[in-house]
Image (cartoon, rainbow, N blue to C red):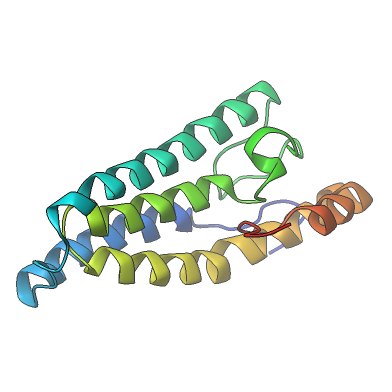
Length: 158
């Protein structure tokens, strides 16, 4: 497959994150990892989930403003570097991961935290690295400059 044409033939990220939700719920029914979260912590989980949703929504709006393709298995039409893309090269995937992690606290199901880590790892291997190759082939020096300034996921400290 030519990375300049398309990064992936399968839209991996939504499939992976959807499978992670299903797995967390199913696993908790079979092997409960609940009852560990104090009731007072649950609102923190809701805030983390809302933060993830905000990252997703903000990134999608930024992509729309730049007429950038949002589908992970289609060719990039623009290199978006502003808004949430100035703090993470993958704010949609970061948002999805935050929503899963927050769900662990909000729903008292620690399987969500484990599945967040599994999903982030899988998305990195099956989508992000391929998308980065595609962006490098499509945008050259502009991509290299951007990738040198902005972390793949996020930077904890500057």
